[in-house]
Image (cartoon, rainbow, N blue to C red):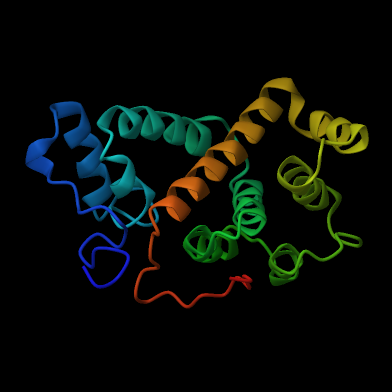
Length: 197
């Protein structure tokens, strides 16, 4: 292998073969390759990597399905949170995978640029600002301030905040998977997250 990834998987591990998986893991595999799947990236992404550990793939998929679609999280705020996680972890793959969905969910270019550039949240919708500050404080600070916590708790409620922070934590874990296994962008994606390498 001349590159630091397999061209047929896009990462440092060869692609998983469906026939090597048990029935439950095959369902996860089929979910990733189904053109009507809810996944944004299919098998070329973290799901394809996680299938190397079928139990991780099964449990992660179950949690992702709940947290993204079953927890009642506003899809627009979900995408803002994921972009913040991508920015805080310099995850070009996550950023590219969620940029178009964020726009489709109504996240403005202004908010996207604020996240991308680590700019001030002053003057934007207070809930958007709270989500951005929450993510920044979780991943870049030493603690979440009482002000940010109180604002998030007031907006989401206790259960909702646990779910929302779990969403962000899940995408942080995804960023770790993507970095470790050198996940490559899809060929049609244009890198748009400024990263110092």
